[in-house]
Amino acid sequence: MARFDGLTAVVTGSAQGLGQVFAVALASSGARVAGFDMADQGSTAALIGPSFEPFTVDVTDPDQVLRAVAAVGEAQILVNNAGIYPPIPFEETSVADLRRILRVNVEGPFLVTQALLPCLRRAGWGRIVNIASAAVFAGPPDIVAYTASKAALIGLTRSLATLLGPENITVNTIAPGLTRTDTAARSTGADGGFERVAATQRVPRVAEPSDLVSTLLYVCDPGSAFLTGQTINVDGGAAFL
Ligand SMILES: NC(=O)c1ccc[n+]([C@@H]2O[C@H](COP(=O)([O-])OP(=O)(O)OC[C@H]3O[C@@H](n4cnc5c(N)ncnc54)[C@H](O)[C@@H]3O)[C@@H](O)[C@H]2O)c1
Image (cartoon, rainbow, N blue to C red; front, side, top):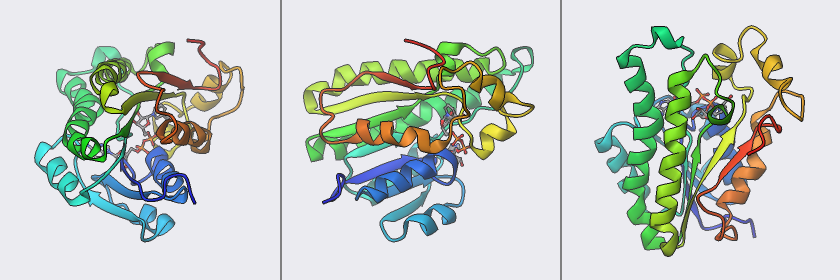
């Protein structure tokens, strides 16, 4: 029997990048996966097959989120992965830019968690995993608004862990270092950025999405019931917490 047989996971931002890899990993371990993304999820559906159900959802839109959650029905696992990280110099970041980043990276996880919570409560247990960023610990100068948004996500994790611990629902953060995805290559990874970041790591090579999978599966595992409120920094040892 696979470790997530009979369980349902909601993964946001599952059309590509890390979210797609997470969706594939959970499905390969037996879960039914509901993918919430604004973008077309055809390539994820093709990789996974019938145990993947795509929902066209903007995670910042409460009505869309509620409709998708109602359609999913039952779930035990939520991976809040959808996020944006436009590289905008601090001096040029407008209030509109800041609000857009906070909206997707903080409001999105807040709304999806709130909407899915009744499902986890009905199940009698649950796993909520928020994908933040090791930027919170490194403090890179070129993504100030993004770093602030991911620090907020860690705060969300900790308070929710306190709220939901008595109900057997764990809430944890995974904080990846710079990892090779198409979006990362277009933004922070451009102009040798991948190699620059890799040189700051104890494991001095560029991270691949597959480097995050074992941590995700560990945190989501039904057996990881005593692990909550934590931020697991998967950054090749760039920062020691
Ligand atoms: N790749 C990295 O280096 C890295 C490092 C640390 C943290 N992260 C975090 O990991 C997550 C995934 O990063 P990625 O590199 O795979 O990004 P990506 O751009 O490849 O994928 C993000 C996905 O989220 C979706 N999305 C964006 N806004 C949405 C919204 N409002 N509603 C629904 N879906 C939305 C996009 O359509 C896309 O499919 C993000 O939260 C990012 O901040 C990435």
